Image (cartoon, one colour):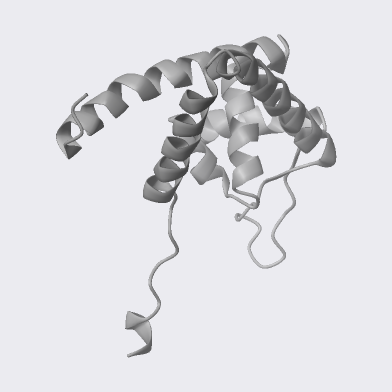
Amino acid sequence: METDAESVSRALLDAVPLAMRAIRAEMRRRRGADLPVPAFRALLFLQRNTGAPLKAVADHLGLTCPTVSKMVQGLVARGLVERPDSKTDRRRVALRLTAKGNTLVDKVRGETADALAEKIATLPAADRTRLAAALQTLDIIFRPRPPDDAGAQR
């Protein structure tokens, strides 16, 4: 197995889409047929980005603001998302999940994690240990970091 950075990056490009395909398939199976995939993806985004504006959701989904606005209206009507008006700027809307929305996302994520755990459980313990370490390393590499404020204080 090649371990130079270029070989590892190519292996990552091959492995991650396969893992994401399995994760998406499990989530689709559990989200409910009455909730379209883009709407569920919006819920996932809002759980990680509470208070996000409509434009951020639209950018994440690769859709237009009017399309996402209509989608969000449906999610609000279903009691999954809150769209409170800003007290300072009525054009600014900070979207967030309701308790019902959070419960739905948590349920789907939990069931998906359980399904993935069944696959992972088939690995020998040593492989699970290596996988856990690799995932921890990926988290370190790719997790967004807050901007460095040290330079701003000088």
